[in-house]
Image (spheres, rainbow, N blue to C red):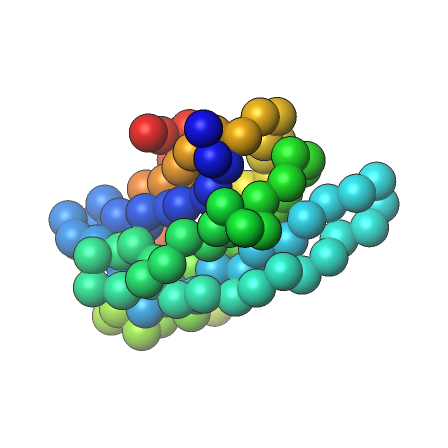
Length: 117
């Protein structure tokens, strides 16, 4: 089986996909953090392409950084300064060549994630 990485972001406060949310992907090795790419969610709250496709996949530790504050500001969420949630980092390991799906369920005051399918 080929390895690759995807995500899906849902705005649980508004009950819809989180369109236009910027996500950065990093590879972590020890104390080093290497930026691999930045993507933006589409109308379905997903990215148009796999975040880490098969050709670029390698086992290891990664971090997805969801720019929630910018998204919440643009979505019309009640303003606050500073935002309770601004940048949401999720660090996780990929130990084998498989489909890793890391969704984010987001609201202005909380979030949840899990290994999806």
